[in-house]
Image (tube, rainbow, N blue to C red; front, top):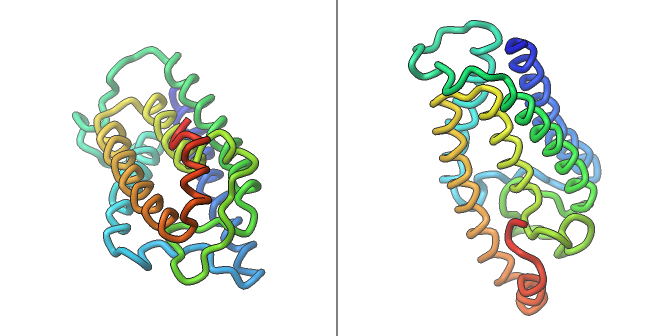
Length: 193
């Protein structure tokens, strides 16, 4: 049953990543460059090692790839948290889809200083100013509950801290670009939930 949870988490991970990439491709067909990751700040690339660590740790569990046992040894033996983790990951994928729909043509990976679109405040953005990041964090917490090891917990914590840093950078840009409209939005809607 544990292998099923590991394999399901790989499928969910692939769906999660492919959902974002598919949206970027659809926007590219409209001549909108959705992936501007690292364009304004090269430190954006700090996320990559943590994402790669998570991917490797997730795949290593399913395919018995080499990994030092103390790093992948489970914190607990029961499978119940793994089922909760899969449910969280599935909910995060659904939330991600609704977020991408709400974004419309404004979706970007990174800060687009050259061609920012309208300020999106409808759809799921009525409940959170950063629903895509809430989905990312929820998804990775779900992965931790499935894989329950030190590599995933360290990578998830680091990823969450880097996401928070990115949110602060985006908020600074949004304040400068949208001014009073963004300030009013901030008064009505929370940063996370």
